[in-house]
Image (cartoon, rainbow, N blue to C red):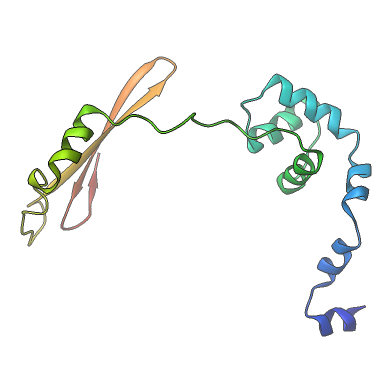
Amino acid sequence: MNQVCRMLGISKKTYYQSQVPEERLEEKYHALRPVLDRLIERHPSYGLPRLKKALAQQEGRVVNAKLLRKLLRLWGLNWQRKAGTGRHQPSWVHQIIGELGDKVNLVRQQLVTGCFQLLVTDMTQLRYQAGIAYLSVHLDWYGKLVYA
């Protein structure tokens, strides 16, 4: 077998994996399907990592992430999280900046030759269960140093 695999340029693992069709995989893990159905029904927002963790913690079954992904795809279970419903609306600030274009882009008008001559910043809103927090990051344009 080693010589055949070497001639074909494939590893032995690849050869032996090709000998195990998906039907055998489904037969081997058929007891796992009702458990996964139950978990997905209880927690529809879970992604693959959380589903894997819940499977280990709640059911006591440890499954490789690649195998779990393959089984979910094989069984056609709807396990993928539904992220946002669409694009978010730009804020009024972004709308104004978009309309004015380069007229308000002061960074393009500057000649930067050293550190701390031009600092740029960005601010983002972080939502969490207790409320809202704001994170502002400052960047030195010349040295690309970040200050928070």
